[in-house]
Image 1: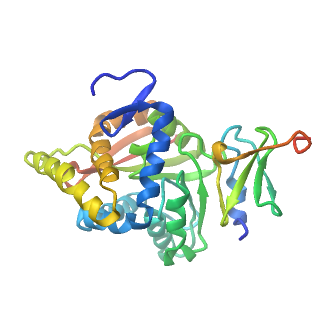
Image 2: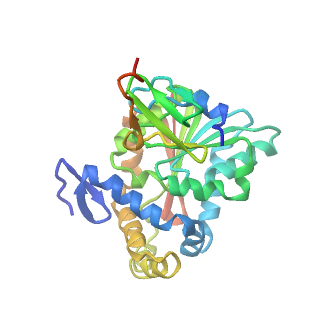
Image 3: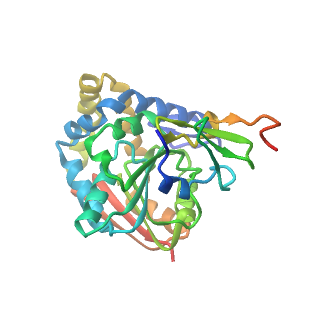
Length: 252
Length: 61
């Protein structure tokens, strides 16, 4: 697992060809799309909602802001941002971009999707179909872990942002609190796949989820990658003892 | 279902990052530079080269 060949990437704990990962991740999310939101609630006992609220708080969306929400799947982040901007007196322009059409279709069906400030597009975070320098903010929540080439995703994020634009990422991270790490291991490798089997009918998909979380770089390692992509003032904040973390950076 | 004009304003070809032509009849977004037509499914543009149709020679003119 520690050995990395040039042409392979991590898919959970397996090494797969770089070309193969995209298809495998697509299968995982296509298979769970219709029950994804329910699963998130069960898996995190509703805590994912608090994390997402904290994430949107940190962005502080304003009316008129152009926001690209990548891997935005079923709309959880975008709906919150749209609501927040409207509470401040106007609509933001939010584009949800996800590589998985099944996830987008599940999102379009939700009642909040009727908000006219939200548009939907199927696209790849590594090759975004979005104009250079067009966005005030780029958000990605629980998505970047599933991409194949992190550096390419970050460089695309940088490209689509306007000067002065902001990158904000929410992702599972490395548990910092002592004792919590072992408990979390038991939960994610013993409980989570079984829960996935029962609710979404796909234990393997949720085993992938647990494994991919462990493979993702630590808070500081990921922050370094964001800096390397060109961003300034890179900061992170832990959530729930580091089970999740938010990273922020600015294109100056 | 028509694509939202606000979305069309910011969309480019993911390969060439150049502007697209909206073919409303066929529900496609055409990248002349990449010689690809990206499908629009249920109003959602699918901007993935693997899902796109290669333009014929006459279409590329």
